[in-house]
Length: 379
Image (cartoon, rainbow, N blue to C red):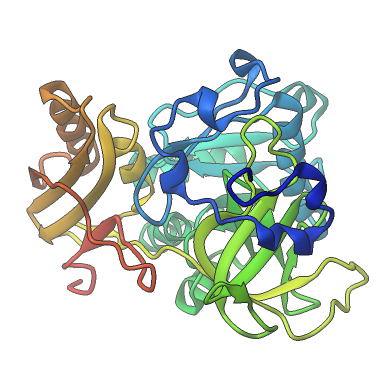
């Protein structure tokens, strides 16, 4: 701001934000917490979730606990707006190897009860966990939900019939949407979300678009640096109004979307997105035809110290290749941990090779797939 000769009082409304430069993941990546956080915040009391992004770089975000609660409430609104009640249970597919087992205080009163299901488990274990929990809603990454639906079909499971299916990450393409609806007979709702912004927007069937969380975020859609016109696809840039610990001002989400040309018709006055284009990742395929969602691979690789960017490629039914752009922390122990994690996912079905690269070429006009499979269309 000093370089631009701007003072805080110069920023009075959303339009004034355009006077500030854009903030990217590269600006935050690897910077000491003290440099990217507010000076009046006790960082030891902050929540620090980790996100990956379109570039494949994991990034730790800092939130005050009260702000993290606001982020969670944006999800609650999306669930309620979609017809789900606080008393209905949900099962959430998690990419972490160890699923959370504890309960929040409100769950003891029967509110918003949730069971995490690790995607590191095999598909029969997924099915068993869902059958035992009997949730009204399934929540997860779109490709994970599709893999689960295909497993339910394969094993002819008839008693997994949720009322809602919420896709919360990845592209919910038409084929995946139809598969989920056909297999589960449920309402399929897409939610556009990120760690940085919480629930950015949720699908409203009445309006034919996605309502923006305008009370927690300022969302800009930029085309060649200018505000995009309604219906024109552009880059998603957010200013999180509740990121007081680690200010996210004009932060580039790494996705593309378009503002809807129509006004809301459901009674909500929140603006609409007409479409969202995010990351696309493949599934890993075994010789038997069994598939693994890309979701657990993020946690298998990105959580290992010393990994800056990464990519996993299935080169054949029996070979997986990992490319790592390392930081100085990367060592033999990091390599062994990645191989061990991946072996836990693909078992003895595939050999694993690894290459260290100086960098990955990144084209902002194309989606960076961190999990790729040359065998995805072979079965």
